[in-house]
Length: 240
Image 1 (cartoon, one colour):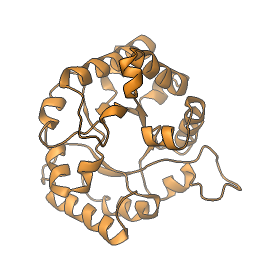
Image 2 (tube, rainbow, N blue to C red):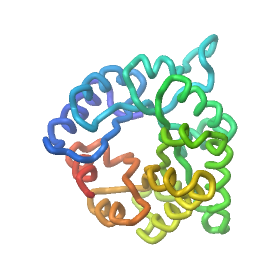
Image 3 (cartoon, one colour):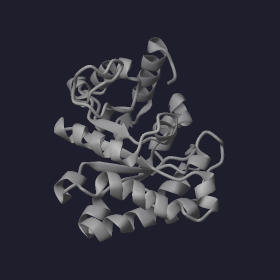
């Protein structure tokens, strides 16, 4: 929840102007609902750049004042919906079951999901982080068919490294990404597991992106604070 309309659209214009003409990285911009349609239109003719919503309602339509449905998002030309972000889970007590319902709404409207998972510092210190992440993924996503799962992107968020300036070590990040990949192998097989993008979402910056993205199972980033600076964000997108 950053930037007013003028500031937000200026940031998008700045990012789009600074992306290389031969940009080979898939870039997904997730603005506030109120800018979503405009940002999606700004991306229309830019190769490999699309828009995403930061969330959606678990309900199809009706008397849910203040909510935004997946069909509304689809009608704004967005392509993805971010679900289960740690801030939504924490601040709005979103459960795995609720997110399973939201996934259904997203798919019913031919959109794709960026599904967030990750552990708190206490869970990591208590050694339960792998079990926690497994439950988040399995309870919200493992009802999907192989074909449906091809429309899922997973983002790993070590909650203790978000907005703190603390970044999980490269080895820590790779370890969890490999664990997630193996969960997908066990459920869906090698082909789906290898083709699923798993993003790192914990204080990714221009100065650590190259090292993180060089890891076998880290396919990109879910960028928070650094995305508010066009130069930093574009530098991260080109760190492959």
